[in-house]
Structures are given as C-alpha cells and as structure tokens.
Figure 1 (tube, one colour):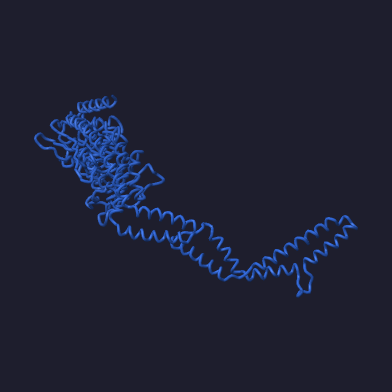
Figure 2: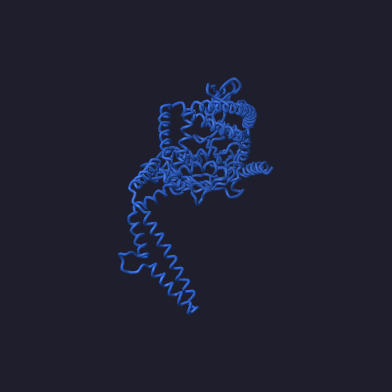
Length: 579
C-alpha cells in the first residue's frame, strides 16, 4: 500500500505530506482545488515524463516521494526486479521508497530506496504496484499481454500452466540440442578430431593415478646417487674400519667392550645388565655395517634411467598443462569425459533420431495440455463476460457488450492438437484479449482502444470487481470515475470501489458525495491563499462532523437540510458497509 506521499514545490502544491490508510481513500474538494494534481504527482513518481512546468514558481525544483509498504504477495512479485537491479533495502525489506526530482533547469532524477535509477525503471516498478485510471499508462487491464494471466487466475489455471511451462522448457532444451547437432557438422567434425587425439594421447601415456610421486622420489635418488654412495661407504668404514685407517673400527671397539664387561659381570653380577646392553649394541652395529655396505654397493649412477624419468615426468607435466588440471587423476577423468563426448558425436545421427522421437512425443503431450487449457479458458471467458456485463449494468452501461476473445495460430512445427499443429509458448496456444462495445450497433473492439474518461473508468471498475481475486496489482487509483453519472449511481460506484479495498488499497478523486460516503479515510483538498499566493492543502477529515460538513458542501445544499442529507448519505453507506 501507498503509506506516505510527500510533495514539495509541485504545481499548486507548496509542501504536502499525506498518510493513507490500507482501505478506501477518497479525496474531495471544490473544482480547481488541486485534487487531480495528486494523481499527476503519483504518475510522475511512476516514471511519467518530467515537465519543468510542473515546478512551482517559488522554487527551482519539485520533489515527490512515496513510501510503499509491501505485503507478502507484492514483495514476492517485485523482489526479482529489485534484486536484478540491486535495489533491495536489507534493513527495511517490507518497504519501498520511490522518489522523483524535477528541476526547472537540468535533468530530472529518479531514485528507488535512495539509489539513482532510470525513469524507465520507475515505470517498470510502477506497473507492478499501481493501476491508475486517468491519462496514465499504468492501467494493467489495458495491457493486452496481461489478459491471459488475469483470465488464468480467474479460472484457477496457474498450476496447470506451470506444468505446461516445465514441459515447454524441456522441449526447448531438446530442440536446442537438435539444432546444435544439425547446424554445425563441420565444427562437430573438428571437435571429434580433437577429442580423438586427446583421448588417444592420454591412453598411450598409460598413466597410473599415483605414479608421479613414485617417479619424483626415484628421480631424486638417482640425481643424488653419487652423494648417497659416498655417505653410505663413509658410515660403513667408520663402523668396520679398513687398512687405510689408523683408528680402530667402531664394531671392533664395541665387541671389545662387550668382552670386557662379560668378564667384569662374572666377578660382579651387578654389571650383568650393562654386559647385555654392550652385547646388543655390538650386534646391532654389525648389522648396520652390513646394511650400509650392501646399500653402498647397490647405489649406482644410471644416466639412462634418469633421462627416462625426466621424459616421463615432462609428459605428465605437459598433459596437466594442456588440460589445465593439477594431477594425473584429473587427466584420467578428463579422458573419460572426452571419450563420452566423442562417442556422442560419432553417434550423432542416432542421437538426432532419438531426439526427434522425444520432441514429437513432447509436442503431442504439450498439445493435449494446451487443448485442455483452451477449453477451460473458453468456459471461464464466458463466465467472466457475463459477470462483467452484470457489473456494467449496475453502473448504467446496460447496452455494453464484453467478450473474452481467444485466438490460435497454426504453425507447421507447433504442438499437436487433433490433426493440426498450433503455435504455442509456456502459456499454451491461446492469445487472449478482452473485447468491448460500449454502445449499441458498434462492433467489439480491443479494450485497450476504448475511450478515456468516466466511461473507461467504469469499465475498469467493473473488470476490477469481477477480477479482484485474480488481479494482483495492490494499489488502485481512480480519477474521473464519476464523470457522467448522478448521485444514485454514485452510491453504487462507491459501494463497488469500497468492496475492492478488501483486496487492494483504493484511492479515488471524486465530486460525488454518495461515492465519498463509502470512504474509510476521507481527505479534503482546498486552496489556501493566506500567504498571498494560492497553494493546495490536503487534510484528513478527523471526525463525523467534518465529513458531514464536506458531504453537505458537495451536495451544494446550505443549512440544516444539507447537513441532514449528508448525514443520511453517510449513515446509508455505513449500513451497507457493516452488512
């Protein structure tokens, strides 16, 4: 709902702040008081062309700002748009602030939630939030592309449509694959050659997933073989000794220690443990000496094997670099995927045949659903037409005809319905348009081409009444709805507008007291000339006395009789509302 509207230096408005209620809001006042200027301000807030002439003479810029509270349904509908443009206010997700600034000189600016946007985006947001009857382009019922959505909501067909849309999406994917297979044989051939070469190259390499670490370790040993042999021999010599060394070998020394401790333990049993330790060390040193000797003999420098290792590791590095992976396991995984793709390309003819069968099956399945949707829409369209005609009769448009037109177009590649093929999309095969003839003898014409003014407003009101549950536009604004109607029909219009406020916020500018009596919130517009220049002021009427006084003024009847008539009008409206 439009919760707040702030206007500054706009036309005859100096400064104005209004808080609207969630129900039926009515604005009244004398002719020329500036009531419809509020509608103009909202239209500018929703992306209408900014004319510098709107800027009040006493200022250099106009500022219009609206604060909208989003109910869960509205927030769901508009969130995708706000997220797309990065306009979601994380601190206040339930509110949307629209702002328009018009400069006398220079460009106007637009903002959503404080962020600058194009005026076209304001219009896009506005179409989701507002229906304004006047000279605005924000009337959703006059946008033909919305008619099928309104009819399907009215007929409760949205779930069936969602299932159809899922099948159409599946079909689109299959058809895209078929086009890719058909349209670029040369590219596929080149792709197959590349894949074949890559698979053969990887297979020829005969890679093992863990071999790189093994190869690196072996290369490291071979590259350091001379140093390894030298160190092992040196350690062995220190243990065993040789004729070239003057000092005794370590093994001989440990064996001598063990022999001495053996004799000592025979004399002093307390040294038995030390003797056993010495014997163990002597044996271990002998074993270590033998191991080092064998290791030194086995280590040899093999340049040919080292070269083989380098070549193998370079092959692995090349394959990793070529396929942009980090290890051999990823190379092998790529080979599997490439082989699968290659098999698909090599069997593309068979795949095309299979896809063709799947597509034809989906076209028949889609056609069956479209036929059911079309029958349901035809029946719902007849019910909708009868309901709208009845509403229009209440609004003194008894001669008006209204029909829901469904049209289909045949297409050779379309879905199958019976023995024909029809063009279709995610909504089905039907083009839906609301048609109307306002006067006897006139042919039915598209609703978008009906005349403006009070007649068009009543047509919209009738449609809104019938479609109130189907129409998800949260804020409805009516201007000129009372043109050409009198007091008796004004009460009917008032009741119908008030009934819309159960599912929508409704704002209405009116001259009819019978209509205004149904307001949940009644505002009075008047011109204030106390400051030496005319300025429109709008204030809420705070109590019954103020409302009755305004209704009496609208009746144009002075004195007690006028007040009594106004009191009766207000009481009658309240009785109907309470019932």
